[in-house]
Length: 237
Ligand code: 9D3
Image 1 (cartoon, rainbow, N blue to C red):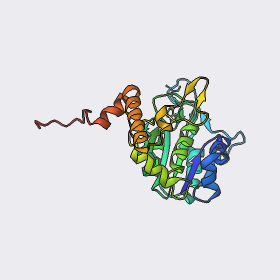
Image 2: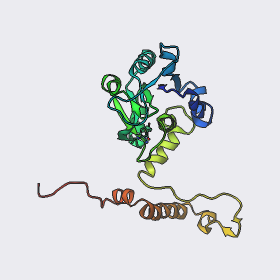
Image 3: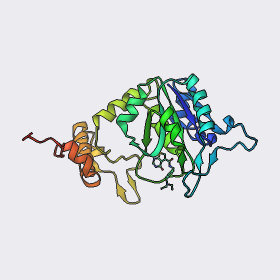
């Protein structure tokens, strides 16, 4: 999997290149991450990447020329779509992660300031993605979230097939509670069923815990799981 990122804060990506499973995927050659800085594609002595918005208003907008040159350089070596991280994008979820993980590669475009010049979106962006209804300061952390979500789905990453199996098993349900030693911590005991050695009883208890949690915390997920959601189907039409 080849991923390129376009960002004026390239060192932020050390969070994925330097740690954990994402670092392991890179070390093993399963994931190749290239980082491109639009500032390296400026032509003026001040290396200007932003400009004042036409029409007025607060903040700055990322200029199109450094972005276009930077994106075109990234795409020389990176196959697949250009994905623009923006609060206006389609919501990212696990099925989108699975779709992206099947590609040979893609380029993540991350903005700063108020946004990027719309002509870049028109000419070079294939897909606009948001990570949720929350206001952040830029697209770098959302980009890293996508890289992280995809890295664990790539063939050859530690525990990949096991995790994928677990994911489909617990499809759309929250996880059950986990415990490890000691048996009593600050006066709180591990639920007896987990010490029973009865694997069928343990499996049933975990399923029930998942169900209880999902119904209480994520009624939206629970409705879909239980098949009681409104799918929009109308039997009369
Ligand atoms: C305060 C500026 N806002 C004006 C109403 C617009 C705005 C511009 C840029 C808000 C946030 C950002 C920076 N965020 C992202 O680039 C971003 C993001 C996000 O903020 N939330 C969820 N997903 C994403 S993906 C990229």
